[in-house]
Length: 328
Image 1: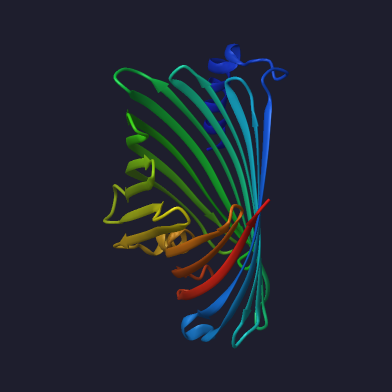
Image 2: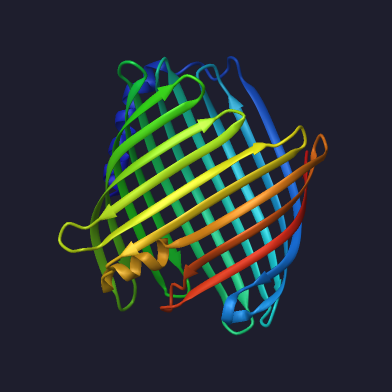
């Protein structure tokens, strides 16, 4: 799996290396810091009942621009405290490093992402889930605003509660079409290699799928991604839909909505291991108002549910929070 990813990066390097500009020319740097506090009622279904959620968020984004490329570093930290039947403290840490290189209608993008989720419960103690992701993407312009896109993604999860790890390698070949006005449509085929390793369970599976993606970014933002995944030797198949949309309703009032939802059909016992990791459904809506140039107050509602990795059960969460964000 990893060799295929490294092979793709080697081809990308050989293709773009002659085009690299001097890093001492045309360098521009921009850093943005955002801090937010939010709180409100929360319900965690029959597991923990009703209570109050307190959350603090810090985001830092730094972008270094070169003549035909840029380097982007994004970090996010959030601390949550649930005052419910059992006290729950969680800490989320995320880092994302992105390199993008342009040449005429072609571009190369390399991503490295790290996520760490640490939670502490009165009854279960501390639990950690770590995720690493590497991705390479090469887009080659062809004709009439059409491009050929190759993507290779390696994803790894580590679960302390199971003393186990899960990994996925996806290779995708797609055609992308661009329209004037920041609109694009992408259609592709992919193959997933899945692996799950634990003390008493080792499983692997190959899946195939198709992806359709539409992006529209102007006064209104609309990004829609649909994935259909299936196995050839049995009836397993799943649908995954991801929608993000939003716009400014007036000069200061904005509204955004996002949805990430997965339907798994005819699930087999060995694929249950993988769906416990990847089936995470979330619907959220946010209404914001700009008090000042860099200060935003917002009301956010969140509905989400996911399967417990160590149990055949689901946890559902309902949140309504009032927040204040300051940009520096």
